[in-house]
Image (cartoon, rainbow, N blue to C red):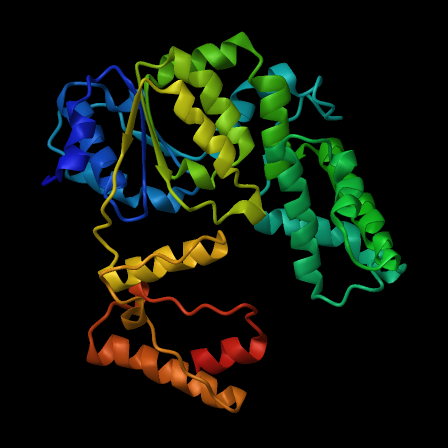
Length: 382
């Protein structure tokens, strides 16, 4: 694995160390982390003692490739998990010890873990009759989106760390529109509370309840902490700026008991804030690490795009625009259309040109819109 000077510094640090690695997107941080994973395996560290922690499982492809292609001796497999995945495993393992205390009405029966889809199914069964009674009368969004929004509020309460009963009041406190709309948040609170009560009555655990039960009842158990600390001795935590306060609290308490830690932080990120991401809390974990490294150069960003990115940041932060040797105007093309269908045609033609004429992989392109209406989505797909 060929590494730059910046990346090789990660391998130069002693194996039993805590490291915080930060830098811009595309500067080789994950590549360096994958190389450190490989070095751990080649040094004889058992694979099943290594945990790759991520905000999303799909971000673990780089590590999966290293594991698949490594020529290390046979042994246990490296775990690639999210904090939510850890919570689910531990709740399932310690269920008999916590189910009664956590308030489940059938503590001797096994739990049923809900996916997002099954959680929406149960939410729909509960909320649809309420909609017929007049709940959410002033809300015009599709019902499925309404169900997912209520579930999203439940999830945020769990990962941020406040009670389900506080959802309505917090939404009201953040509202700056017409007072008449405040009733919507009362309806949201009623539906969230009803869903939570139904889960407790039937041993149903959606994501929010998995996290809450783990954090309040399972993690404080000595058996749980000893199990995790003995199982995983080395952790690589990538994209931690896109993760939630729950995950950050967990890793902060875990670090002192680990043989090695590598935390990877993307500068100017935190795009999942609307899902509860806490980049500021993630950056505080830097203080838990003995070694603090920074990468600088991006290997995936062309110079004009880098210059445009810098100027965007300066404008957003109300800073003076600095001069760059690279022309940011080369990174973009500005086009106006008189009619909406003409704009769609222009987008489609340019996308087709990238794929067929310039041989750009479709997965390397993205079409962004401030609001993706059905007409826009359908038109582009056609």
